[in-house]
Image 1 (tube, rainbow, N blue to C red):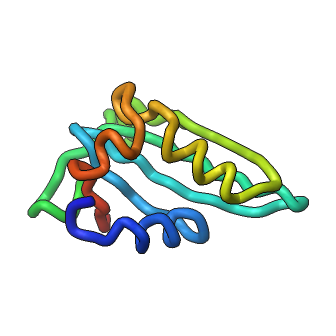
Image 2 (cartoon, rainbow, N blue to C red):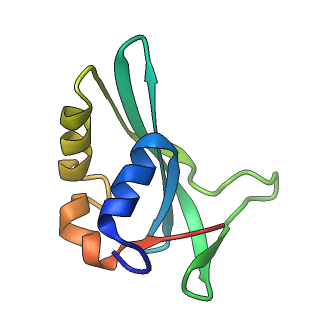
Image 3 (tube, rainbow, N blue to C red):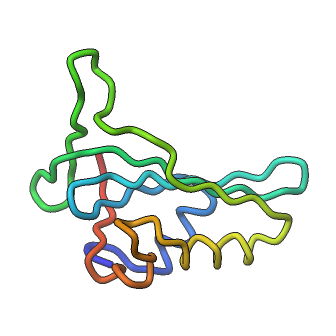
Length: 109
């Protein structure tokens, strides 16, 4: 993972929020716990990289993110199961986290 440590991302993404960049898109990751169920989701939209570690979201004439959508959501009582499902899901241009991990950038807006 470019610019950050993988373990730090995994810990941050599960308990707070983390922003990834891959091939012109932002992947905004967040997890939460409710009613003894752990949920992890990923929203995506188009963006431009600025100075290799910052990004600028692309917006339309109404100020809405371009191609914004939730692309992934998993819920289960077992957090490790949800983590495993995310890492193996084909949500990054049809590839899994592990397939593109060396190319991912962990960003600050």
